[in-house]
Length: 407
Image (cartoon, rainbow, N blue to C red; front, side, top):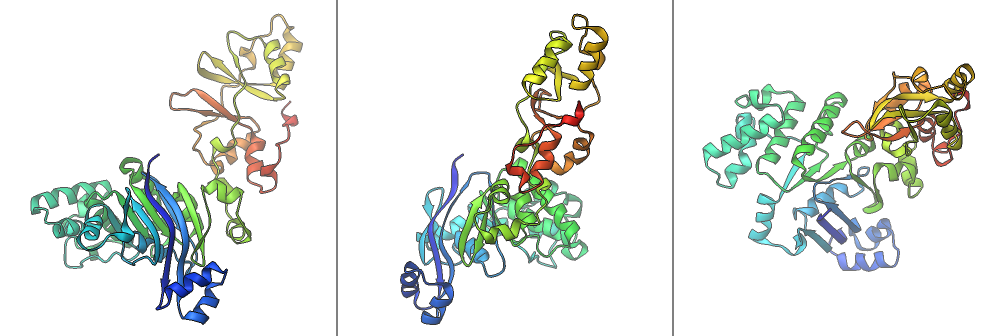
């Protein structure tokens, strides 16, 4: 994918001695040493990253880590001390005046935690505010406001006042206002931080649903690791103004860069991070009308499997177990035993994006779980022990044991 945002060696130092602070950073001095010696505060130090077009890039850190300063650097609300911020190749750091205002009007929109809605304006007028500033005619403003309100499920409240809406609905208005000008980049600074947990989760789901259609480039700031893991295509963890680790949710949870990150992810529910696609293996199959019980049993044993799926052409018909096929051979003899009498037709299918916590029940049955694509073709198989192994930090790195008791 094409990079929409590229940040290179970005620094922000507050105070009157940024050059001295930069020199001290080069010698390995800490933020505290620099503050004591120069009075300067290092807010962001040597940040380098890229955000692909259509990607959600989540910056996660505790209070004081520099994440909110970083997001304000991206649209020039705070001038950088050193470094580059390239958006479609244009360096925001070197852009001034009208050119910078043009970027903010047409390329980047920022959505904050606090809604900042005009209380005496209607919802539709609040959504259309940015368009009004840009000089868009009133009729077009209304049409575009209604279109985005419909996207966030608030069209029926277009003529209501913000005070008539719940907190979650007001945040939807804030999101709609950001989307009304059709920006290429959304900067979201803890937008759901003021919401209660249930509404917050609803807004997270709402954002993911919208993103499937809108495919905006989003930089999302949060102090909540669960939120970061849920939303982020890539996640950056900040500490003391530095990026400690950048990676996918799976990278960060399974391979934390240091003790700081390890402490963050220690209590994370891995079942809400890893998916069926992360633990599935290539399927070993048999054909319902082309393979006998004897050849299928031999195929199982060669692959050290206790069960496998049976296809009728490209369609999954069911699965058979080692135990049932062995019984069929004993009963009917090698020449006569077919797969049909042993076929289990009540089985679970999931897609590769299904989270492991949704597989706890099916895995408990003890049979492999079928992973299928959009055309219902079998693309992989999840062994029950693979689900359990991934949920344990130590077991996830070790080979899974065979499911001997299925025989």
